[in-house]
Length: 77
Image (cartoon, rainbow, N blue to C red):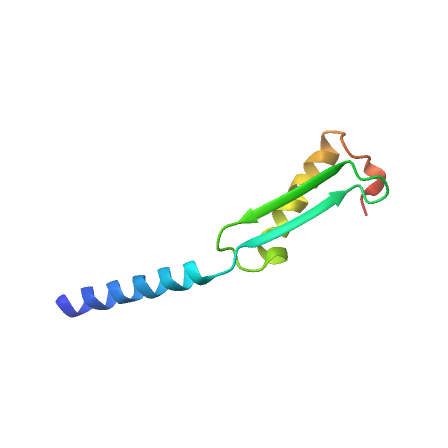
């Protein structure tokens, strides 16, 4: 029992170390592209790569801006 507890603690420590060594994920953009009115910046602590981690959040924000009428639907592809 003591051995398995020791192994679990070591694994948790290794996970925490790798988590805290990861880069922060940043993604900054502006829109709409022809006449920019908005800047959207997302930062995820220890998120890894910006596009992979934060890009989907930025996309959701722009979709909401279009849905609410802040950005014209002509910019959708």
